[in-house]
Length: 341
Image 1 (cartoon, rainbow, N blue to C red):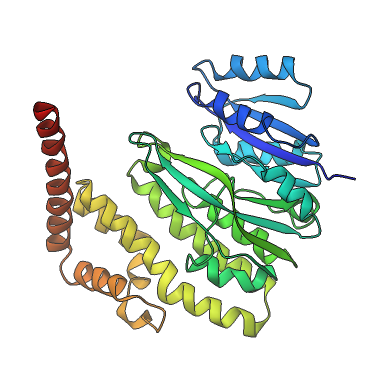
Image 2: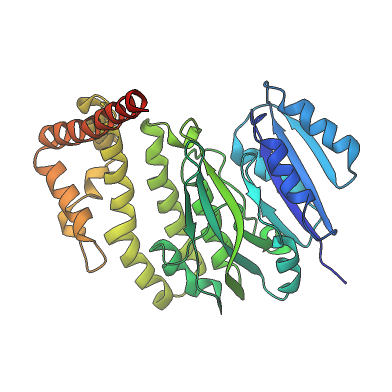
């Protein structure tokens, strides 16, 4: 007997894309599924599109909520799911053909992780994120995921619903950036047997207008999400398992989250005094400290941190000028191509 897959799609002002997303599911050569569309207060016509699909297809269910963010919308989907597995898909992404059938064929696993493609909306360029096929304990994959040797994202994995509910694994509704990575880590650490495959599960559409591409101080949420994740690991792992992961987080992933966010703010021209004040108030200088470097700290992270700590103003000027120089070159290149063509 086939297993049932619940596909959870948070919907917020994706009128241009939601048809493609839903139809990529309806085209699947597999029938035992439900689609849960959680309309997160859309005001662009997405709501009406979702309602129309639900009228035509009994497999599609629509839940309307007040706008409260993608994490809450996904959590609402979890609480209303009835499948054996859940799979999340963003309202502007598409599911690859054969994905649901592949999940059914591997239903002995707690978590099934596929590969994915990133598609640039502007020029249709595609970047493939392909994993090597393997079977493993989820705890053993935490390091690979942290170091991006294991590549996955929303839409590219399925997890047993009973594992999510038993361990109370939900998206953090206070977190704007990094909440998906946090959720995936919680799924991994609670999964005994995980299937990783080179089969592509989804197409991630990269939109420059997307909320995740906005630059502001909320981007430091990525650090907070990683810190919560490390604390969660401490409660779930034995001392030997935790030690190596702790070294990776303390020497690499935590300082990386802070310095990379700081770099983005500098490039965007955010006031340096405000940046330094924010970092001081959050005690982030303790995290981006040379004393915390270890064998897992990459040279590029060391160089960024040293440069910023030694002279924040030089670092700000360098990043701001470098980024805007490349932006200007790109802009002039577009003008030149238009004139020539």
